[in-house]
Length: 114
Image (cartoon, rainbow, N blue to C red):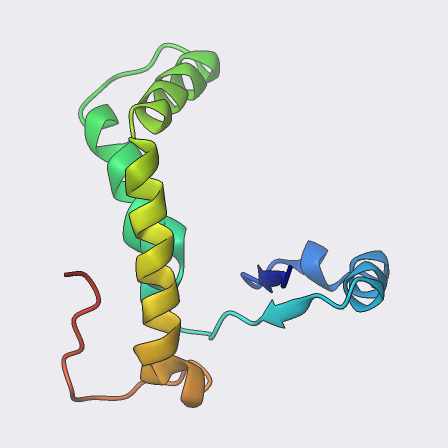
């Protein structure tokens, strides 16, 4: 089984222990291009689906925020997560962002979702 890990520019992905583990287990890593929120599943998929049901709500505590966020997250059907990751894979294969290392570019107006 081939394993690919998507790095999202967090320092914990660069620690020595993580790099040694990935090397030992022959794990392919996919670096997140800078300046490219359309390539990160939580940006193009998750945030809006969790934030939308919470919009306009006043919370009394941090615990309430966490509970309501979890409820919103759990309300997302499993098939939607599957579609998200299929879209993410398509984005990686069709987007110029990877080839230009996340730099800005103009043109093409690529549509990722069908």
